[in-house]
Image (cartoon, rainbow, N blue to C red; front, side, top):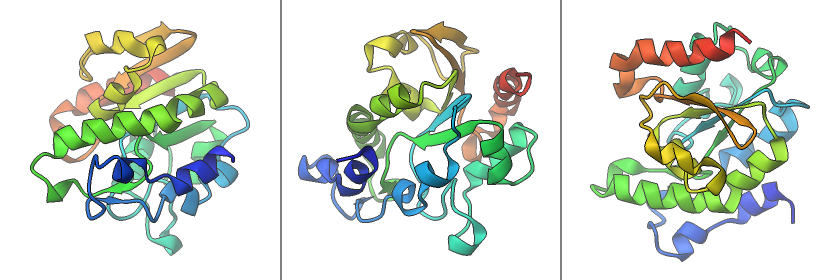
Length: 205
């Protein structure tokens, strides 16, 4: 079974009772629905962006006629100084993956942070490390605390535990250039300068 099919069929967070089905929608995996690997993966990935999870509505790789793009797409392309074009994003050899493949409804639980950490680490163990190993990007651009915590559980990236997402980390870890960045948008506007500084490191490439 290939990785895309495994992602589509996965229900492990539900089966392991990490979260209930009304809080984690395993029926629709946006990565699969929007054929991300087939349509948007460059032949060679220069920068791999790792985010948390698909939003409740929209998706980074969805187009207007299929439900609308997400605020993350708008924010990322703004900081990269690109137009709102997924084609240009691909041409620059950029690619984005979510740590969590399902749509997660965080609003329904007061224990969301704890649940979120368990789900993201579980999903990362199942898929994320294999995706990174398969893509072999030049740079891993970590968008937000949840993505960092998922990545740091692997020996190659455990040094990330020593850093906060707001640290200006840009260093080589096990052959990958890793950059930490505050998740752009929403409640992180006070970190706008730090976010722009992080993106500037790859805009110069």
